[in-house]
Image (cartoon, one colour):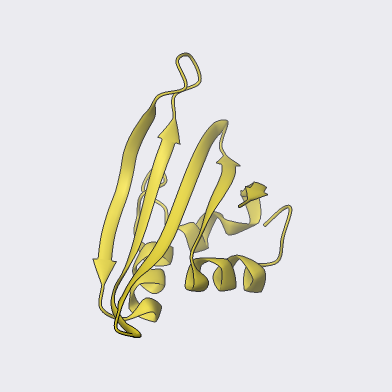
Length: 100
């Protein structure tokens, strides 16, 4: 991973953030957030959008939520959403541009 460490990336997903990243000539926005009610986590969501370079519109690439944060992150990391590869398989080629 270029631009951050894997541990920092995982921590940001765990605690919730938006990350701008690029891979294979495409730009993406990765959004992670937890829904908390009465100090209890109800669900953790991760969404990935691909940015269309010509008009800057977002195309949803991945969306899921789980009651456990770790499951949500692990599902994302292992999902085959990057041309049939998981994030873990492409991690060394991912450029982290901005962590918000």
